[in-house]
Length: 173
Image (tube, rainbow, N blue to C red; front, side, top):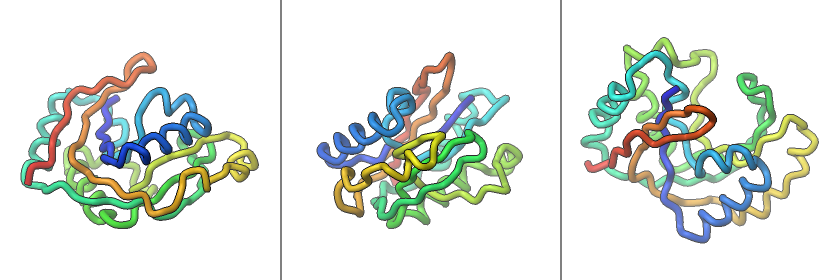
């Protein structure tokens, strides 16, 4: 499966705090992938180069932009059948949504889960037991908002339980 992710650039201390929090609260995913926002979810049946070309076309004139993660939300993920804590995108939310929508143009629209509205977020905790998730000390992430910059997007593939970067595309506009 092919995914398109963006890894916001944070201050070094912020990245360390996020990494540590995720290692404690979603250790398997933290080992697989760095803190990110998912722009395109598990596209099947396409050549990776098609997605790389699409990403280049979408971001070629797009400038880098600021994002903030400014509030938490706990929700049940019906696809993965687990409870999650998300950091939701505040500033930059509209740009992230526009990027997501541009990637799901007509050719890939059928792979978009239309019953689930896109909410730009970063997953920071995952647990099948909701009560365990409710006991998570969110204060260890520090004060909100968490600010970062979207500088590039990454086309990745998950194969044999490993994440592999296929191409990184920089926002140059």
